[in-house]
Length: 130
Image 1 (cartoon, rainbow, N blue to C red):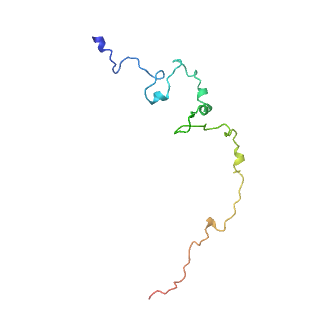
Image 2: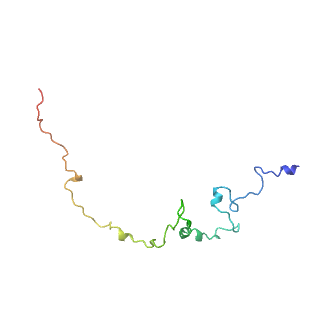
Image 3: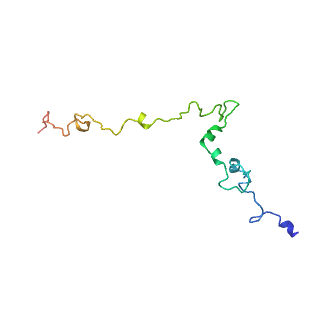
């Protein structure tokens, strides 16, 4: 009788739990990260990350739709190899030379202001009473 009550799972039990990387969780993380299907004791130098984590691999393995254009579906590739520019021009080809000395024409008035600073008012034209 006592052994039947010990079979229930409770907090702090020593039961084997399903953990990553061998089992997936039933949530978003488990959907996005697939479980490890290879040998469980692989070390950091044993993976072929350079084949699947490169920029070219990401461009080549894009999901595309074969059924037509729907919401979120792609009918053609995003980056086509024929329109891609492989060589970049040097900065000297499209940028002006900034180190040469330039001569600016003098303006007729400083700060482009030709108005008088203090205006002189003459005697009043209409006489005042008194």
